[in-house]
Length: 349
Image (cartoon, rainbow, N blue to C red; front, side):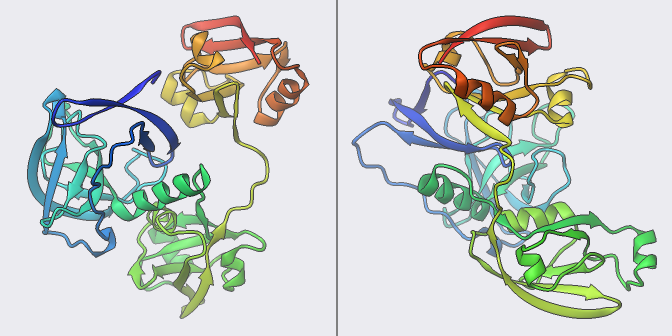
């Protein structure tokens, strides 16, 4: 967006600025540009919700401002849906339609337990299967962005695989509940807890673990520095271990900003999402700051930058190396590609 406005129920519109966002969860933090004091809604503890309790959704479905719909919590911990990279959704049958995204899902006392984000629907309208981001995950992201300007994701340090009947048999397990560890990062909280490849994590903080994506989302909803307890199975015996989640060490830069342009290493998922050929190379544009040099020349998220000053780029480091060598105020020659074709443009530093 070039400009962002927040509209109130009394018809007022106030300008807002983007403080930060988390593309992996699809949450953005906005700050209203006003000296006026506002009374915010209160967040509840989404870990304490129960299936069957009341769920009330608010939003602007199909442009109908201030719409309220009522239902129940249909399920918790929905994952592996292919909606977002990190998924641990609350499912509800409260009617959610196009335009409800970003609106709150609240409990019977008005506390926010989730943020409406998506629906399953063959028609595009509500059929009683809606999803909301849990409040605890949203609050963790909010606090991190406001505090540091970015998302600091809690890190356990395991590579995980879902169990299947064959793996259950090979590892002599009595149940398919849990996720299999395939690798443990050196020096990580998982290694310090004594976990190793071949262990099966069955519980996190006494809550059952049923899939790899669920455990990833549960870890993401916790703060850096959180103490956790893990239950795991090794060689048919059950063990418990405690550890402290850390911030993931930054190795290679995978995303950075230049002249108002946010760039990220290109992935297969993004090639499919935007309709590019599988052999396309370059960096994907993930964001453009309003009124920046990049915005003024029409660069938009989803475009691919293939070279800078005729030097091909496949990593953020490639781009940064050339970018840093250009003097402030000088023009850079950028080769940019969209699903409709490629063109050279000049970007002022």
